[in-house]
Length: 254
Image (tube, rainbow, N blue to C red; front, side, top):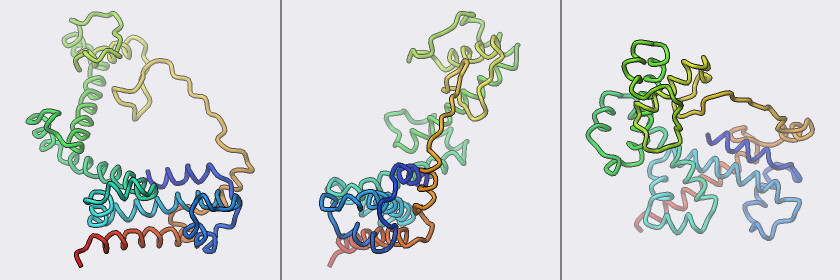
């Protein structure tokens, strides 16, 4: 996710200054409002690299994450520095995703925790894991009801054959599963692999539009990307490490 975000943001700007160590130093030393116009695009790209490396290091370093993103002074520090806040947001998302995946690796244990707790009692990680489990179960039910006529008749006859508006939030999972199965059985349309029960059904037309001209792609090929080892990338990685070291030193008792 981090690399994808970085690539997306880097692709949005065209180079106007050299992506080298000298430019990186100028980006670090100069407030944004004092930058020459010729540097702003390059420094924007440097900022993306900096946030990317900061997030990666925060993901790998529990203490750095606690100090910079969750400590007593973290709120004020994040409010005062956009790079810090963005790095923390990306790190939080990745850490949450990893924690959710860890819970989902033991489905019986997860099932017990989801059954024994209410939504109000769950932390964000458990909430996400339980929601994913519910989606997976619903998707499996839909697939079974779609292909098993006897199971469909037993479970869904009470709902009838009239289409149901799935936008209503008061529908039970059983009715949602039956409506998806009814539609698939009636139309023969099966969603593409990877879609869940919550994905839209029906005739879907996807229009592929060019995302960049050949000239912009040529320019993109010259831009640094996270981890490419370029001077720009190394400077961003070192700057992120310096931010973390400074925060740790400030948080440590004298």
